[in-house]
Each structure stands twice: as C-alpha cells, then as structure tokens.
Image 1 (cartoon, one colour):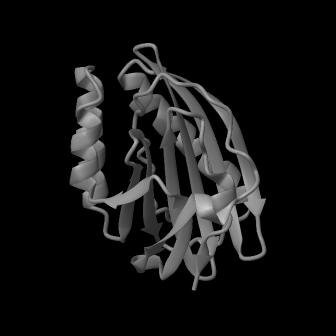
Image 2 (cartoon, rainbow, N blue to C red):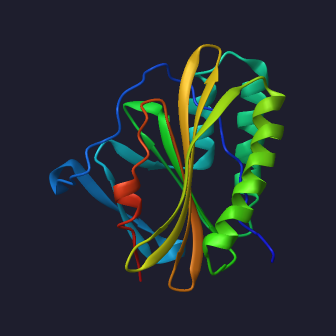
Image 3 (cartoon, rainbow, N blue to C red):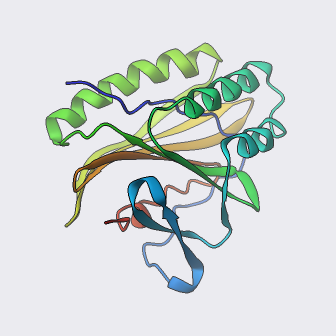
Length: 202
C-alpha cells in the first residue's frame, strides 16, 4: 500500500511541562478555522492564528540556538511547502513553540493493522531524524481511535534537546473519502485530542 502522507516531525523549543488540557470544551475558549483543501472546519484555542509556512519557520528559528536543530527546521518546512497536496499551518501567538501542521494525503482506509505498520514507519523515521541531531525521545502513546465519522491513528512523543522539553503528537485521520494528518507540537503537553476528534469534514 502506498503512503503519500509525509511524516516530518519538527523539534520543539520550550521548557514548560504542564498537564493535559481538560476534557471539557467551552465554546467561548475556542474559535473555528476553515481548512479549504479539506472542505473542513476545526475548533482551536482562541490564541491560535493561521500563518504561512515561511512565517512560522521564521518565528521558530528565532527560538533556537542549536545549529543542527535550525537546519532541521528549515529542511522540514521546505519539505512541507513541496507537498503535492494541500496544507495549513497554525500557531499560538502567545507561544509560537505551540503549533499545528495540517496536511492532506492520498486516501487510505485506516484500520488497526495499518496503524501498527505505520507505527513501525514512524519509529524508523524518528530514530533517523531525531537521533541525527542528538535529541532524546520517548513514545508516550500510540492508539487507534474511532469516532462516529472518523478513524484516527494517534502517536505521541516526549522529546528533550538542550534541556528543553517538547511534545509531538501526530494524528492520521480518515474521514469520508479523505485522509490527512494533524501534527500538534507543544512545549506544554497539549495534544488537542478532544478538538481533533471533533473536526468536521464535509
């Protein structure tokens, strides 16, 4: 089976370590964003804004001092911009180390078997990318989720580089006849699962 969704986890930059967000969703704390290439909408915290890939890359590069990390960030954004499918980028304007990539891929009917195969691919890629820049990492979670409308693979890592802790959570989602992924990067242990599961694809 072919995989067109590119897995290119980025490096985070913060040093905070807070608990996961509450499970309850209060509409006044969030705003709706449209994702045109998916014909979808998603709720995100009100502090998030939509940016271009270059805008976010520039903001992230200002947060890092490690030259290997800076090179990896630049290369990852160049890969994102060359995607043959649509993508969107969001970030917390109060802390640009908290950001989201949304990328469309080729349609794949997800199931538990495919989720296990994908986890193996991710593990290999993480070892190559993160190991290459001296990052320590630990997988915290891998699950196959189902909602009324979607099937979802969730993979979450805790990372550490230069004494800075980060969290990377990737969701690969099939809803209707579309497959796409959300990459949620945070230095506050925020993975936004409750919001991701509520995405409305039309």
